[in-house]
Length: 85
Image (cartoon, rainbow, N blue to C red; front, side, top):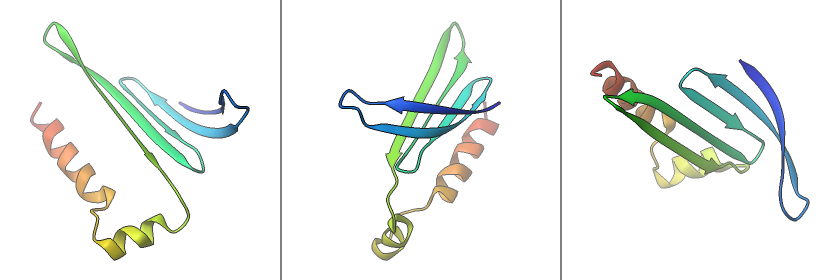
């Protein structure tokens, strides 16, 4: 399910978010912020994870310049781990 939301801060700052909500996970993105969370059953407990980050103009170019790993490798590793479950 795709939604649009607006976040409001304590000091009056606001931001529009695009939200993808599916069973077990959620992804939220704005112009400057990205975040996600997921939950899965693990025996009689629940496994939960959350991740967030900042986005800024030129960030992708800066990452290439300093040699940070892109999201592709992280996604590939996550898929491999989930296929073992």
